[in-house]
Length: 132
Image 1: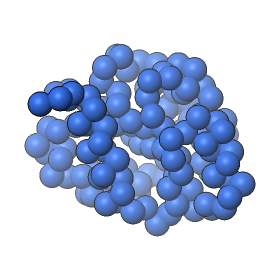
Image 2: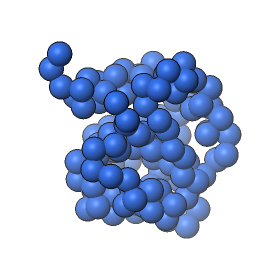
Image 3: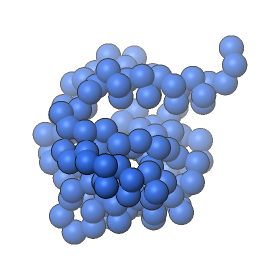
């Protein structure tokens, strides 16, 4: 199975953190991860990915230039089939409402709960694989 998860965050250490947390899965080839360090870079990745491979996107909200909230409707328009989970340090009720109204499936606050992300990824992998 050739599936892709896109992680969008302007902080370079986030790339290393995700690679470290998912090293077993990445090494085993369960999925691939691509990293975008800006919203325009993420949008280019989303548009370039083929229909079946991109199964999930994680995006930070606070980024310079275009924010994750500004990116969200563009991703939803380009790939309405791809679930987006927003990540932020500020998980207040107003932000959660904006994120969900914008079409994201969830909002996760920092520090990131990687067990929660792993569960979400497993769910997406199972839905792509279909019934056994």
